[in-house]
Length: 288
Ligand SMILES: C[S@@+](CC[C@H](N)C(=O)[O-])C[C@H]1O[C@@H](n2cnc3c(N)ncnc32)[C@H](O)[C@@H]1O
Image (cartoon, rainbow, N blue to C red; front, top):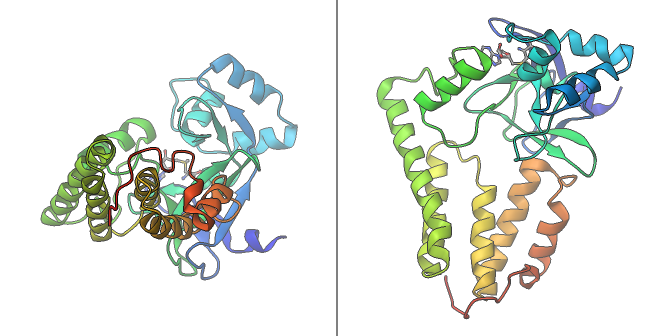
């Protein structure tokens, strides 16, 4: 048994079916699991059914033992809908896993899961320190949704009521969270729209978002470090670009590890901030 397998156990998670739990203290940034899919699936039901038929008997046994909440469709399709994780952002291709599919949801996760196309495995990294015995919980949601939208999505797609600390918080607390999320979404839109005519403002919006993120737990910074880096590199402010590239690399390693698909690219940016494909493409400006 590998060290990775030893830091978790899959067992009963009261009120949620099965779940994944830490069997020792896990440090932020640690890779908890890297797992090959039991089966690849897609929106094309015939293709999905053929892939299920082609599984080994052992894999089929693991597959049909998984949780199913969709009884209005054939069992295999219900299992895919309940358990599949996306293979990227196109929302079409996905995969089902023996272990990874057992991870339950919270709106304030302690892990980040990501598909690595190079390794053809799904990776699970701790994004905060996890104490031995605690449940390992991911988020099934797009980032930065307000409480009502999160609840609606989970009810519709996963048929449960979320009682995580965020959803069960007193009204003033979750309203404050929601208003922070709304501001993050506004600034987030402004970052790229203002980059072409007011890059200084754009960098300011990145900084605003980072401050707001700290107010709601501090996760999800990596794409914003990338924005800061990209904008600074485009306008040839390589001192600033270097700062952002270093933050980007550190944050990415915490989220996806050195095995991550983008690690080599971000390492290159951090070693040489001029190496971005669009570096220096806009008139030079000091943005700091
Ligand atoms: C991908 S499965 C997760 C593993 C599942 N609990 C099992 O027993 O295999 C998703 C399903 O788990 C349950 N689930 C996940 N997170 C939950 C939560 N926070 N509260 C209640 N049920 C949850 C829901 O039934 C959901 O449709």
